[in-house]
Length: 173
Length: 99
Figure 1: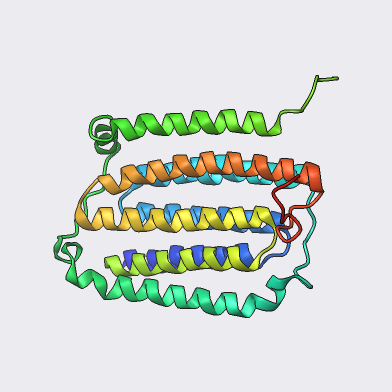
Figure 2: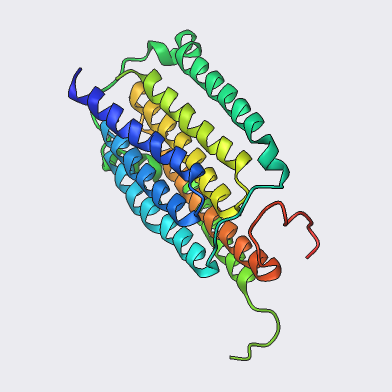
């Protein structure tokens, strides 16, 4: 077993345990912390795949910005635990888990088998890491239009958030 | 490590997110599960990008991250305003569009 396999098992295991913790902790704060652990483990997986810049962006954007937003809202609303008892979901939890496992089996089946028949299987894996230069070059030439559209998405999100949380009527403060 | 191991891990992470959306009633945790699913897709993108020796997959990860950031901002704003009206984030109790 070489170093890459050991690191894959370690990071993959941590991210899976973190993901299961996200959906099993009762308090949202613990779920958020488990999600941060998952994001860090996935950043490790990105480094293993030679995607160093994506790993850095994962830590900065996801574990940094997005999770701070989550924690901020959880603490702002001061949410306690919600009991699932009495709701229809409480009774159908087993069904949901069985259907989920079915979905996982389908995903694994596709990952193992269907790839053999496509061009993906015939490609030669490359070990060279992708540099930031390559990503930037592609982003500002071939994908320039999608890149500009994402700025519009962010602008729309910004305006939408302001409209959503704006206080109605004249401000009394 | 072969591509299929990364894809299997990605499928498992995605499924965890799906199960979370199905069994949890807290709107904020449902949002976290959506983030999990987006991240699983990112992992598949990067793994296939490495396998094919292409940079394109990593460029798409950035688009996914941008969309995720916008989605989280909007979604949390909606949750905050729902909480202001209803004093709850339980999606079972928030079941009508009319405020």
